[in-house]
Length: 165
Image (tube, rainbow, N blue to C red; front, side, top):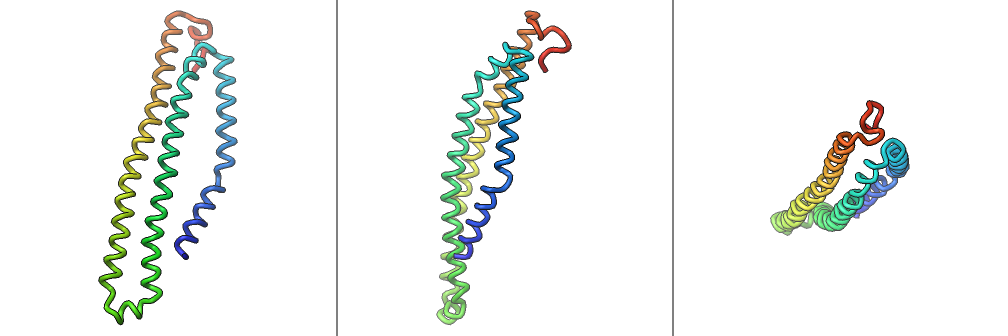
């Protein structure tokens, strides 16, 4: 019970923390970046904006993986913590009945189950981050390539030193 309460309290703190301020900052950066991009060089902005759906899909997939695996991990570690808490609260009875090995093995099995989930979680989150980074780097590559094409064609705002950066 105590371990679940501590976990829930930490989760609440993480949810409320700096996320609202970060959200407003990110929205402000997005809007200002789009305005500057379209004012300075709309041809480049339209092409780079085309890859935004791929980045959003990658982010949604990553968040879905994280949320589903996080619930399973919390449940597995909460079970292991509950077994330890129960054994420690009745340590005299466990000792009198020579149940140390039984309780130790029960806790070890719970941790092994949680450990397997942690490995899967790490692998899936690595793939999710990799896909998201691939989408973002593809946007950079597309922007650099299309920008070089525009400079080569001497499009307006792309041939001078005051162009889009």
